[in-house]
Image (cartoon, rainbow over all chains, first blue to last red; front, side, top):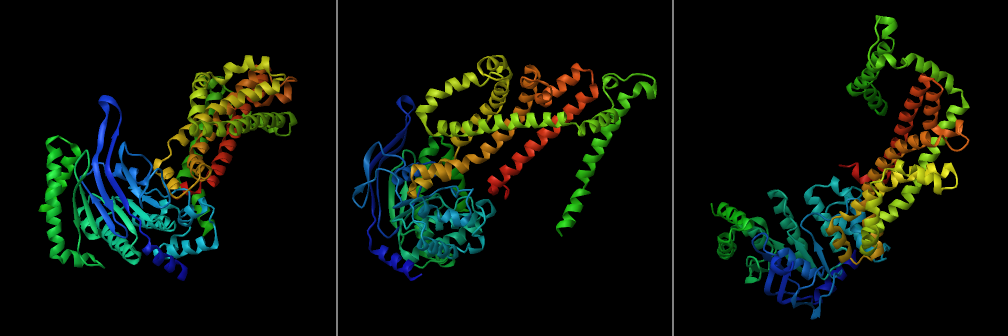
Length: 290
Length: 273
């Protein structure tokens, strides 16, 4: 497995920066057009974990579609290492909100999908797949189908399926949504550990403030619809992080208050507009303050 | 252990209930059919039906009859011929319509106009334009399964989770690989369902087609089970009508069971739910 470690170190040197510059995106046409992203700019810095947080339904998933290259912006530019993004590619892998594991493939076959699809069904890929299976703790579930795995296991299998492709940037769209609180915290620690090991460029989208602060190096706070960047906060909590350490950290609580104030303003804006999403968000917000 | 579960399954409440229900059904049928000689009055409907004991006797006599088995053979041949042709043409067609918008736009309107035409409405036309009666029966059976299979495959292939396709795309998969390893397996459950429904329709159609066309040319034993029933009716052998009906029930059950087993083998991931 020395080869795997070497590749990881080699990758650390690579710059893989994604720059989003004044991007606009609308859906529909004429009077039914809905502006989702308006003049949005931010940078996903190389070898950092950037977390994007904003009220639910604020257009974060649209930004992911754009960065992944599944859709193109109406105007503005998105570049990766200074080259414009024109379509999907294995340098930017997306982990979707709901599990996108292929139900007809076993855990192992799911992990091997990428290499096989590119004609790299080699001994090396197979070794890496076994290594990742062990790394995500699923070696006993190697030949099980996704429906036989728990929610947390599915998320880990998906992480392994993405990691085998050695993406320069990993994009995660609310990956731990829907897990119960305990599994969620375990996944935070697990995912943070994976990140701390090789410090690849990661872009993580969430609506959960605790999750955002626990994971982020840089935190992007988004406005309500049409979305743009409201603020960028550097999360200077030392790594490696543990749930207890972050819970005890006064710095973390300071940041949390700051983030909550900003998000509350955004939620209030659309609340006056009568948005259901904003109402839900306010509801969740008031429960947190208690 | 394995034997234990088998025995417990054999004597499970559900099995016993099933056996009891079938026995009760036969008893009521027998009593109804013999109501005139047993109770002195004729029960409506059931009083006109041959009793199950007579049917059993008639059936026992037919078991050694080559013509009866020939009817089974002919009907099976037509059903599987028409069904296989429907699968071979219908599955690729449905998939192609799902992945190619231009082809879908050109072909789907015609398809939707043709689809509501019942297969049996095709009988006279197909007798005219197919050279042999055998081919016209096969064609009508084919139609019975064809539309159902195409519509199921098309629906299944079009409702694939978009994230599966995007995930595959972003991992660098080619269009062909996405088709082969994502679209095809994702559509398999719909193919299995479409085939099962199509198989049911095929049996309905083949029997009617055999009755109408009077069996493939030479008639008689080559006519299949549909013609067997029809000729029994014409010949006034009412027990044989019932034998023919039950035979079709059994044949249909076995056809569906084979498909279910094959479908289960093809989609092992569905069993784990």
